[in-house]
Amino acid sequence: VLMDLNMPIMNGAEATSWLQKNEPDIKVLALSMDDDENSILRMIRSGAKGYLLKDIHPDTLLEALNGVLKEGFYHTKKVSDTLVHSLQPNGGLKKNEHIDLADREIEFLKLVSTEMTYKEIADIMNLSPKTIDGYREQLFKKLDVKNRIGLVIYALKNGFA
Image 1 (cartoon, rainbow, N blue to C red):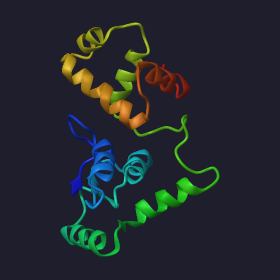
Image 2: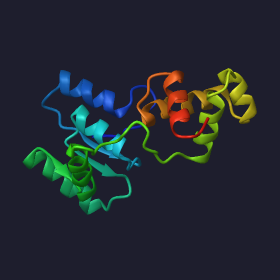
Image 3: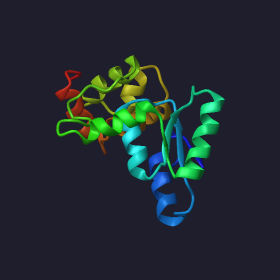
């Protein structure tokens, strides 16, 4: 199965975990636009047998599919480097380490750190409440937090609030 990390109802890591638990013979190869360490590690920890970026050459995709079928895994140099780094004593993503955020995500983080409601934030950012929900859910995943308090703590630790 080719699995994207960002999906509307169940994210790729959750879907991969579910597949590994309920259909262990199905092999998952992650295919995503996200190249940050957190995303890669989440998918690999969830049971993905490899992680590719969507801009790969079709030959690499074919090589990866064959690798997963024959060897049980396929990792690019970037993924291998990420895995090795995460195993180092001081490696892996730290809670106060900056993650690449878009300008609108930073703006949202600053606003979510106030007492404003999500509706008020949507009005200020000239976005629909559903779009704000999308920003919130995306940041929950990207920053590996579970709620608004986690977003605020991240914003405070990283100078966004």
